[in-house]
Image (tube, rainbow, N blue to C red; front, side, top):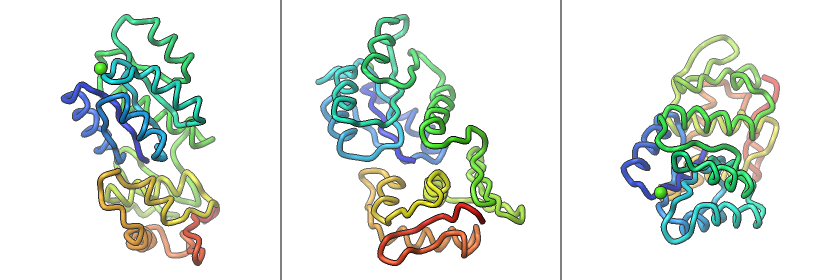
Length: 221
Ligand code: CA
């Protein structure tokens, strides 16, 4: 899962980024409204955290512009304390959730997870697909036979993305965009390596290769 984090309070932003990375998210950080609007338009984020009080362009304007341009990514806005009108304006502009400052990072992470689940899965429970159970808290996967495997951060993001889109052909380029952060070296051949590692863990026949098209996670194991 790839997240855009827009916050001009840099210590806070770093804190949020660290917490999200621990949860297995890839996080791109920006600190002003202009960059935020650009990144949100150019890159395929699974969710966006948007502070409203931003330099160069107000967050509310950024959000309105994204929605006008058809950007449907789920957005959680960060508002100033006691500024109820910001929440109202935020929802009118197309926000999906809000959090008033100051907040506990844990609450932000929980809300973000809920938001992503709401937007990407019908099933609100644990992520269970094709006989696999993904333990998001511990970044482990349990296979059909009940054997648990630890996952690295990238393996976890890749598998979670595939489990959220079972039965769909996912190209290497598409997977690369959803698994890596913006400034890392995004070589799509690396995906092959990770797919191989995942197959070793979840079973060879679960992830099929569609020659020249990409990969597909079987809906039924
Ligand atoms: Ca701010």
